[in-house]
Length: 214
Image 1 (tube, rainbow, N blue to C red):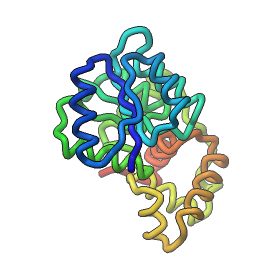
Image 2: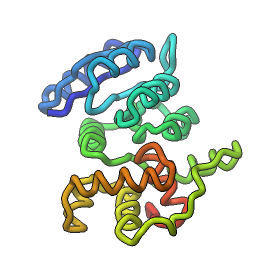
Image 3: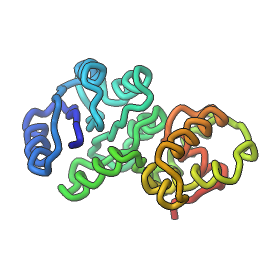
């Protein structure tokens, strides 16, 4: 059962999402109406997935996401936004959010996104990945610059599959290794490349030409 934290300042929206998720066998372990509540709930309950609205009172979704990921870098946050090109989404993804979903998405899309993120995937499409990379360059920010030549062939393949959206389970099946081995290799990759999370790793792989999303 996937445990979900809902974060949105509109009670009616939260009620609708809760009804949908619970009807599909997921468990909503908490609801927050602003970013400060979200940080507290996330720290107390460690949900499998956090659905995080971007625009909220007191503390917005981006700052809340940044704080949650500082406390728990493994937290899995999906941003909820009205607009595909919302700049706040870029900032949240750069901070480590697993991706975003539009508020007008249909139920099947939302459920698929939650299941994919819960299994370890990142919701990065080609446009989003390129926009985030462009944003790094525009602001003269850098992803770590360690050369991927430091990775061996197996590590490079794992990084490529991660960037293409495969979960740990899928990577294990494709490479005929255990999920534990995948987790261990990913930890080693993050250390070698000085990366903090899967989203940064996916962006790094795309930037370095290890993988593409086309």
